[in-house]
Length: 400
Image 1: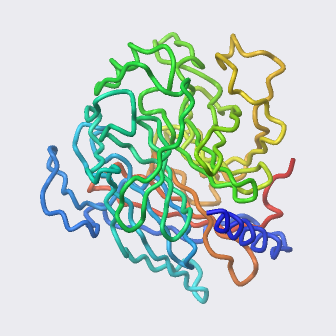
Image 2 (image 1 turned 90 degrees about the horizontal axis):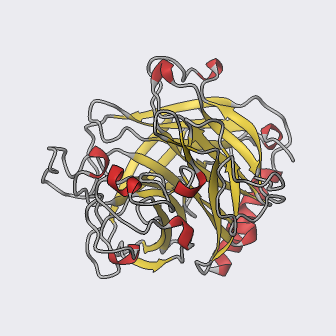
C-alpha cells in the first residue's frame, strides 16, 4: 500500500504543476442518466417499497481509479431513508471525454460490486439491521464516501457506525474496519432516527456520520468528515432541532488509526458537509450544501480549506458555540465554486437538492484540470442522476 500512496501523490503533483495559465472556472458538461436505468447487479426482485433492486441511482460519491477514464461510483443506503433492505453496492464506470467536442462525455457502466461483511453476508441499508454497538458485527451500512487505495482495494465511509471500511474489489468483502474514536459513536442504537437521537447525548447525529472521505497521498492519511456536528457539539434551537457550527474531521493513518482531528466551520445552521477531496499539503476541497432543491436553495458549493494550523480537537469535549474556547482554531476556509452562480446555469427551479460526490477527472489539452461532481437523486425514478464536470486551473484555487 505504501507504493500506491506514493504513486498517487506523484500523479497529483505532476498534474497540478503542469498548469500555468489562468482560466475562468467553467461548467463544461452536465451528464444525465434516466432514473429508471438499471445497474449490473442482475437482481430481478423489488424492495419493500416496490423499487427495483437493480435501479441505478443514489450517487453519493465518486472516486478516480489508477486506470484512466475509470471511476468508482457509490450509491448510498437506498431509497426511503433506511426503511428498506437495499443491498449496498458500488459501480465501476468509464467516462470518455471527447476532447474535440467540449461537453461531450460517454458514460459506460462496467461493473456492479455488491458490498459484503467479512463473512460474506450482504450489507444492507435497513436502519434496524444491527445487533449491537460494534459496527463491524452489524449488517446495516450507509455508504457515503469512497476512495481507491489500489486496484484491489477501495475504502468506504459509512454514516451508521460511523465507520471507515476497506473492501476487496474482487469479492466485495470487508477486509478492514478502522478504529473510530469513541466520541463519534452513539451508545444507544435504534432503527428509528428520532428515538436514537433522543436516547444519546454524544456521538454522531442520526444520518450525520461519516459522509465525506479524502485521500491525502503526500501525508499517507485518510480524512473522514462527519456530515453534521456531533450531538455534544450542537444545541437545540427554538424549533427543537439541533444546531451546531462545527463539524469534526478525523485524520486516519493508512493503518486505520486516528491520528488527529480538526474542526470545520459550517456556513450556517442549515448546511451540512457532503464530501471532501484531498489536495495534499494539508489542503482539501469540501462540498457543503443545504437540503433544499430549486429556487429554495441558499447554499450549495465547494470550499477550499487548509488545516495545517488547525487545533487538534481530539480532546475537546464539546465544540458547541457556548462551550468552545476562543483560542481553538478551525480549518481555514475560502469559497471555490458556488453552484448557485448564474454563470454555471445550474441555479433555478431544476437545481437538484443533493450534489454529493467529488473527484478529479482528466487533464484537458489546454492544461486545465477537471472536477467531477456526482448528484444523488434519492433513487427517485422520475429524477435523473447527474454528473457535473467543471474545468479549472491551479491559479483558480485559493491560497493560504
